[in-house]
Amino acid sequence: MPGAKEIRTKISSIKSTQKITKAMEMVAASKMRRAQDRMRAARPYAEKIRKVIGHIRQANPDYRHPFLVEREVKSVGIIVVSSDRGLCGSLNVNVFKQTLASVRGWQQKGVEVHLCLIGSKSMQFFRRLKLPVEASVAHLGDKPHVADLIGTVQAMLTLYREGKIDRLSLVSSEFINTMSQKPEERVVLPAETVDASELQERWDYIYEPSAADLLDGYMMRYVESQVYQAVVENLACEMAARMVAMKSATDNAGKLIDELQLIYNKARQAAITKEISEIVGGAAAV
Amino acid sequence: MANTIHVDIVSAEGEIHSGDAEMVFVPASQGEIGIAPRHAPLLTTLKPGEVRVKPAGGGEELWFWIGGGALEIQPHLVTVLADTAARARDLDEAAALAAKQRAEEALRDRTGAMEVAEAQAELARAAAQLKAIEKIRKLKRG
Image (cartoon, rainbow over all chains, first blue to last red):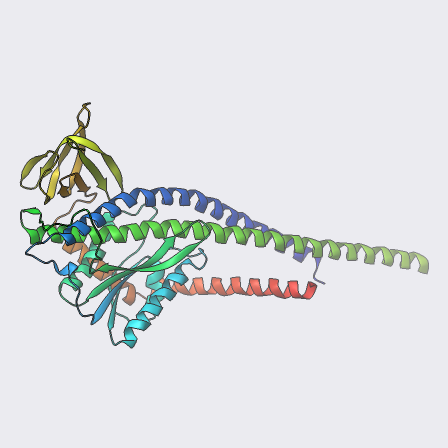
């Protein structure tokens, strides 16, 4: 049986760990609320631009933008969205698993894979794999801005434009609710078709100044908004996952303390009993 | 519906305005345009400037300042996609280059990041050990 003092120090060290995890839980909870608000705020733009792209696909321009045309897939680009920090359960690992599964799938078909990494966790993870990383960005903080993502997205779009990738997808966590987040892969380019039954006749836009320039700008904004949406959603997921992970850590620490307290009490009792029996024994000997 | 047009003004970081209007004025790249209901479908980009909305059923004209963006017009719908970031072609290219460089540096610079990664791996191992100890203890008791 270990000494009483040893157990006491252990209990106090677990107690201080518990304080930290408790604090992290509360911080994550309040950050999650703000992240969720941001996620909600970003949604209208993403929806609107998706609708506009849907309209554009319905129109009949003379000029076909390359981002809207399906090509034979010889190499693909994958944008991986992860968090910057750990201690958030299996959130990042799930995203990486999903990415790896999709990478393996493509490689089996003899398709090249290019990566674009967002968040330092993915940079750490994919460093070990010998895959070409075309762009990366990390440390976006609690308030990611679209401006921070432009360069990263632009790098991938350039590859697509030059024909070095024929398909661009995005792997990130989907926020279902506080308790569950699910990794998800979405195809960004070529842009999906949206059914807009209200606009059936043959028609076209007036383009000012020219269709090529305009559609370029639209497509860029479309991809950026998709990536931005994924980043803010991932942030909300990260905070939710951290909150849950820290809550269970706090609970576990509590259980551990209870157990150790019991052992400590026993040890203390044993020491007292021993002392008494020694005294009694001593007295009897006299 | 007949004499009004629905206006949505959104930026990537939030919704700015949504509602019906009698008339909308926007700073298009080729000059300011006024949009009345049943305008022909049009796509254009916007310059930094103000968007003015005359709300349906009278009322005061609403002003929104935007830092550029994109515009779509459908006969019954105006969508203003406002940019939150200042942009220009060369600026975007410079940002793209920086992103590429970051990726390369992250792969080259092993020392700093590796130490962090190792420390994290260490931490994960310690946590796993703790968990195992706890499990064993439970088994012993049960």
